[in-house]
Length: 280
Image 1 (cartoon, rainbow, N blue to C red):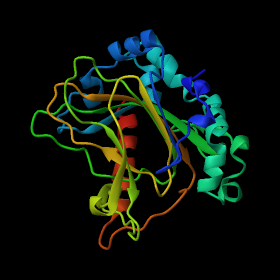
Image 2 (image 1 turned 60 degrees about the vertical axis):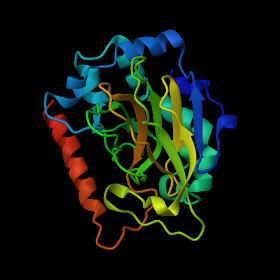
Image 3 (image 1 turned 135 degrees about the vertical axis):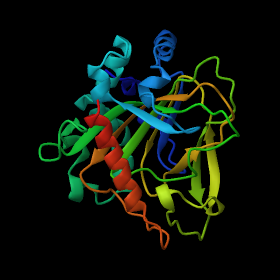
Image 4 (image 1 turned 30 degrees about the horizontal axis):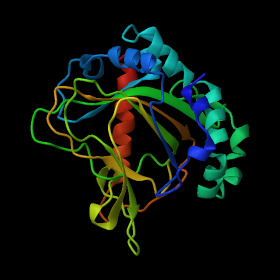
């Protein structure tokens, strides 16, 4: 059973969008083991060159069949592909989901009656939503402080996103903190490339430090604008366990800036994921 079972709906903070933050989310011995067993950088890069602060994933499907992960990691990643994960999300967030998406039931069905599957293994012919879990890094930084991208929205077909921070105790870099934003009164959100939003129209509402064993879980809505703060030079990557769920069609839409083609970025990203799996 995943650590979501230890959470309560009373822990949800609703502004600037529904989220839960928990420090010391895992028992300390388990967290220490997972951090020590986090795969090395070359598992993510496959020996290819990389940029400073580049985001890279190690998805559950190859991870669970390859030999790079410890038994503890394989167990945790598999837990978040199990239908019980969706049951826990419904227990925690169902009222918030229906509040954020009043037409959710007419478009997708009652949340607690939906059928979950595993992303990139099953499809929407037999499932209503597809669960995914993965290890996620931002690569080491050798140059000036930088960000991976500015404040942004996540994929529109993703209902929730969870992150468990697994920072190395030897990592002394500054930054890499998760930032939550709201939109200033009277401003209208239009997306730039990579679904980023002009910082000038945003107000920084919350900063969640990149600290080991901190869990962040939030609903993805048109208000869920977030990003990571600039990170200083470090030989260590930013390390996270990440989990989410995807639906057959977008939950919401946000306009692009004139002349911006966000769709092309999404298509390139999709091709990159497909290529990753075809080469493993």
